[in-house]
Amino acid sequence: MTRPEIAELYARYAQYYDDGRAEQFGSLFTTTATFLRAPGTEPVTGRDAIAGLVRAAGTPTGIRHLISSMIVVAGPGDVASGSAYVQAVRVDEHAVRLVTLGRYTDEFRLEDGAWRFHVHSYEPFTAAGLRGAVLAGEP
Image (cartoon, rainbow, N blue to C red; front, side, top):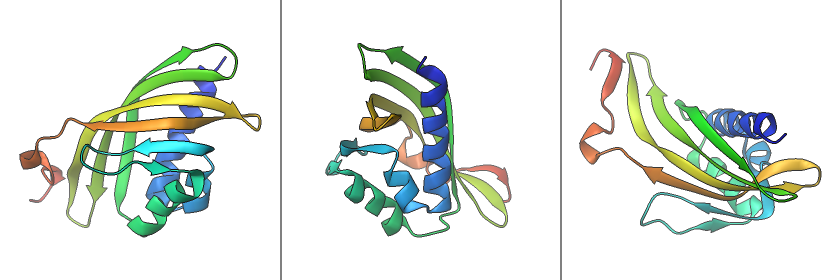
């Protein structure tokens, strides 16, 4: 069964990114993975380059990724696909602010005995005017 393992993969993705654990974040991807970020940005290819995204973001970012509504479709053998909604918020001293809402669409592969992201793409839903909106606390 791949669903529990892939749910764990998404959970580790969120926490490793949010905690700035670049090497652990990179280990969630296959060695030849592709990360397709928001439209208009260049794809990032390879585990080391993907880990570099976390290093470049710095730590701690104050961002918390909340991943939900996962769908996992088992494929033949060592492949699967799936998607999940993501909400990212920034927690600061006085408020919780919206960073983005969107969807992850993924291809997974079993590599070295573990499920990993092979193609990870992000589709934002957030209109520019909503970025930074206060969800709780003081404006």
